[in-house]
Image 1 (cartoon, rainbow, N blue to C red):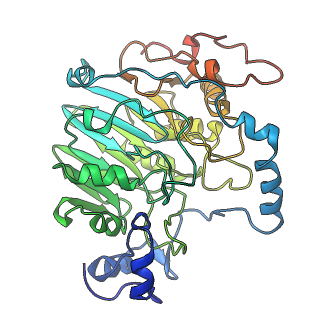
Image 2: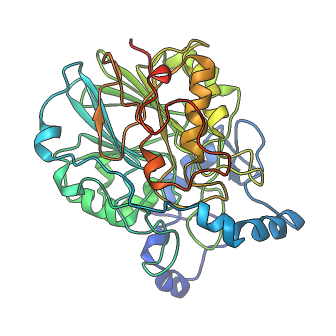
Image 3: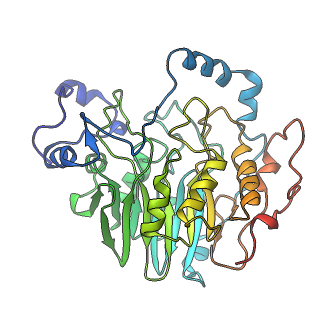
Length: 394
């Protein structure tokens, strides 16, 4: 990409000094396309519904007091080893009987095998979600499967350019393969800067689609924001994704606050055999950009036309400490929300493959073995073991 980019660019000297993980600003034809986007106005990408992206003023001070309180910090991390599933390359090489299989690798990273094709969502194999190797949120559990042992991937899908979703070490490793990268508009500038050839990029605005290896990938709206460098210019788009194969359909939320548009996405691209929904890193200090488990369940139902159909896989929790809530709370509250709605929720350990349309999906409350129990004790549902009532048979 060549030509003039956004206004007030950094000097060449400053650009040379900034970390590679900051990526690159959109420029040239990419920047012109961004300016033409119906979702770009007043110099920035806009949310489908207004959103406050961070605490400010007095709320920032109040948040800091809560975030750094000693007893609260202890509850935000596991107290023991996080149970992982020992998946092997041989396990993943065996085709799923149903044609659809998901393997949650932790946080928002999911390997989806759809009708003979393999899609890797938001691969984050790095030790920290940070531009620096010595600082920033560190993994709370090891990666369950080495990236090199996943086998061939047809397409890598990126939801947005935050460090816990777009990981430089992972992208550089995948750039050496033949995979295609499907990304929101503007994000391609980062990937080209890191060595991904332009002809392997499918860069989409909301409601645009690309065909890759027999799959239809559509970038759908989300309510979030972007940014990797010191400045946050809102010059790269964020997205959720609908992926349809000949027989199956899945949805990945990326990061998003709740908004009415989930109903429209479901009507246009659903219903889905499985949804992968963000249910962690929420806070009352940023209620518009991350969903609580109850809101995540509401989004799942909206995507399914108001019916508790398909399986919901909770994502964006358990791997990094990014919010003031207790580490196990997203899992617990998702189970409660699913039980209240009679919805089918899958609870795999990181690295555990499962087939969403199978008679049963993983239902063990595995996080309790590594979490600090609440003062009032764990909720009655499921005890220390499984919770089959929130994962009914198909």
